[in-house]
Image (cartoon, one colour):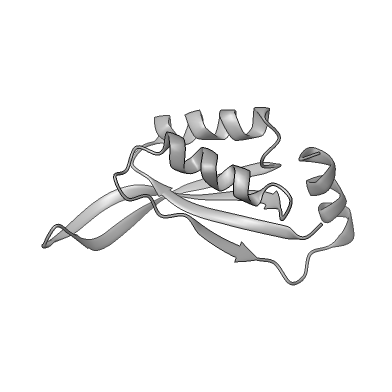
Amino acid sequence: MKPVIIMSTYPDKKSVRKISQIVIKKQLAACVNFMKISSVYTWKGKIENDNEFLVLFKTTSKNKNQLKREIRNDHPYEVPEIVEIEISSLNKSYLKWLIDSTS
């Protein structure tokens, strides 16, 4: 099994905590990290400046598709960002923990 990070952004801490609880409980992710960020982007023809939360879901290749579906189904944004990042190197003890936590 290969490690994968799924990345997304959320509007507030409440929505991040909600999805984090869901995916950890279902063992779709071993860990969810989030941090407050500032984002500048275009939306419906306007330049927006917003505070958001960048969220990193740490999972495995086995669970990535189900995790992405769960994120998409529960996401508060009309057009959610769901990015898959493949990991080429990870220390063995962390990889074991990741696999054990999502099995």
